[in-house]
Length: 125
Image (cartoon, rainbow, N blue to C red; front, side, top):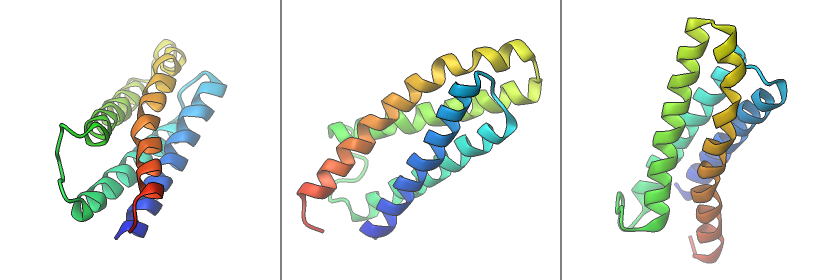
């Protein structure tokens, strides 16, 4: 289960990073970015749930890693919903402004990713 969760969380990093950075570089939200955001979110939720199954204290929001992970997941969901809304509305000015906040959400998402990676390397599984 640990290997599965590690792989899915890393796939979340891969898809979300590709979506955020390519959208940032192009400076315009495109449909395929939206798919990268959603795939990243789905892999993150899957990996997070898998980690909760092996955790001694799942959903313990007093734990820094759990708290930052939950914040990151909710921000990631809001980001994907917002991107969906921008694509559906198809307004050029919204597509061009969207990238301003993507990088912030990505950086916040990295906090629990890096923290989890460190925790995984320092504990025995």
